Amino acid sequence: MGNSKSGGLSQDLLDDLKLNTKYSEEELCAWYHTFLKECPSGRISKEQFESIYASFFPDADPKAYAQHVFRSFDSNSDGTLDFKEYIVALHLTSSGNTVQKLEWAFALYDVDRNGTISKNEIQEIVKSIFNMISKEDQKYLPDDENTPEKRAEKIWDFFGKKENDKITEGEFIQGVMENKDILRLIQFDKPQKVQERLKEKKQ
Image (cartoon, rainbow, N blue to C red; front, side, top):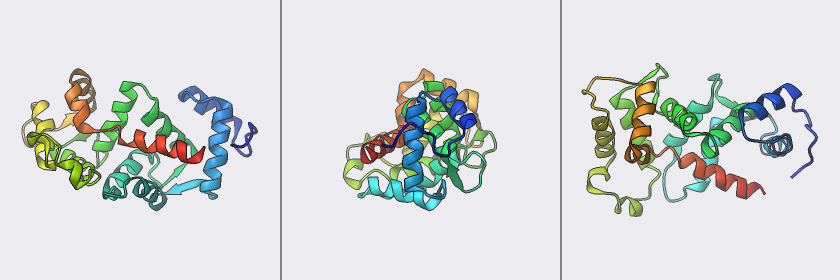
């Protein structure tokens, strides 16, 4: 998968990514080589990102969820993911520690990026997650989780919030860390599965 030469990857960026992810210089250069091959412009558009997701969920509709995941990783809101944003995303969803993953999960649920999560935002993300679960698999969900509305209600009730309350990032992270059931319900591991399959595809 290419050699260890940076091939246009600046040393500053390499050092930054080595410091903030678990990847070695050789791995980062290999990823960069693959990234440029797939995206010659050096950026992934939202449409390309959606297409990647769609290829892994042929029996479902991942478009809405892919858009939310893309938003959460597009740190400068320019409508594309550059190599740094892509690698940070890869690291967070596959090997980041629990708090890092939950910080990302909070960003995913904070649709309007105002620093808090509302019940409507939870419903929006949960609905997009349900679109990715095939109708067949939905049959096996517990009765109190088998619709987006029920699942969102279950998450909201756990945090003990009134209808119009908000959840802060601190409350979100602490709450999920204290309850593994909520960790399962928010299903923030989906991107990890996609990234693992991406890795297999590119090797």
